[in-house]
Image (cartoon, rainbow, N blue to C red; front, side, top):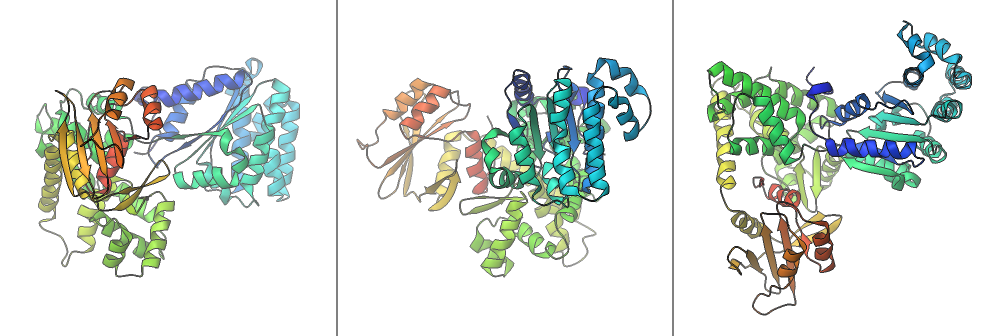
Amino acid sequence: MFTQPVKGKDFFGRSDILELLTKRVNALLSGYRQNVALTGTMLSGKTSILYHFLDNLKTTSLIPIYVEVKDRSFPVFAEKFIATVLSAFLKTNVTAQAMTMQPGGLKKLMEMAEAVIPRTVACIRDVEGDIARRRYTVAYRKLLEITSVIREETRKPCVVILDEFHNIEKFKIKNPFTHLGKIIMIQKNTMYIVSSSQRTTVHNILRERLSLLFGNFEVLEIAGFDTRTARTFLREKLLPIVINEYYVDYLLSVTGKNPFYLDVMARTLKQEAQKQGSNRITIDILKNVFTELLLDPTGVLHQHFTSQLNFDFDRSSRPACLGILTIMANGASKLKTIAAHAEGDERAVSSSLDRLVSMDIVYKCGVFYRIADRLFELWLRNVYYKREHALIDPINGVTQEFRRSVENNIEQYLIDYNRPPVERMKDLFNSFNGELIEFDRKARKLPKFVKIEVVRYSQDMQYLACHTPSKYWLCEIHRRRVEETDIVSFIAQRYQSRSSGTQKILVPLEGIDRNALLLAKEKHVWVWDIDKVNTLLNLYDRQDMSV
């Protein structure tokens, strides 16, 4: 019950995604079709976005068809698809709207629609006949062609929304995505919006099995809220309880700004504050809530993570994968280190890591492997690992130890929170030791610096000068939005009269103007926005930086 899509007044944010979807639908009505793919981890809010989009789609000039592709048989999917098509059409047809109030299943829908769209209903009967004869591949192609037929009969284009569409592969159909791709290519008046919680899988499907259509799908990554939206969401959910800014940013960091986590946290924090008669969130309230949600076996997040483990891994793969995840949760992030702790062959460990990456549980950045979900990582380290590796049954002392670990985690965050960005970047650069990372599909080597110093070149501007035996890195950090003049000024900087062998890096914590970004690329200045900086901090086991 905690994972149902958010609807109505409870929906929050995502205005940029909704505006883009609306823009694409308006373009379809004007004769231009652009398909869209939504990807993101489970519980990132994809289905809630689609529900809200459909709820606010008031036009009757098109037919919206939303179908969740579940892990079921093709006949079940086909029946649901057909029923949705007919129901959606009847709702957009003035003469048939009164009939939609009558009770009845698919048979009744077909009877009501037949008087208005007889060719479409005939096509549906044809599909049903092929399914009855178990000609699933033929029926699948005809099913996808229904939107073309209904367009010819009604002059209304269709918007087909396939939620968790990667499950199509589980139908007993040969090359289902090949058939889908061919149909999409010829259906110029049908727009497809597909979504999947298996980010890596959907990218592979679009790139490999729908390769001819890859450029025709606009891929939108649905992650957590942006920082401003997440802060507003948390504060509004807590009202009238107040919370300090640094506690807000800690919660944003540990939850990855995930809407589901933030909602659960906010509701439980508010209940705990009211229980204590407090009008403000305190460290004691935070520790109580983390204990209730993560440590207590009946806690919402404890049950969620436990269910996730049971769902993700079968009996044969569970020991190896969980062993690797607990090793990673305790700090190991490179193949050799993980394999050493696992006491296994590097090749076998690498294979397990590849599996975890393909499942989006772990992400790979150069030579680093990290658990994608920071809250899940905290639970693995402080709850799952402790219980699985306790020498005696952990009856006493577990709660106190967990509360101490939460307090230590919060204190470490607050220590870094109060440090100037330039100090934190200097500390980060001091951690580099020749590792390879990957940003924007480009490999970057992070050299071991022999000296790092802060150079001030105006009253309020300074940069980091980082020395290696052969070259320099100059890194400038801006706490305001970067403009084109800032790039010009940074390019003009020279360190010890040297211009060769120098790599310049700009860190625009509050963002960068488009023209400034283009100029930086032209002058080979690396631009690390706040997301890239936090990725690096995470790779080197540091706390996030907030803006």
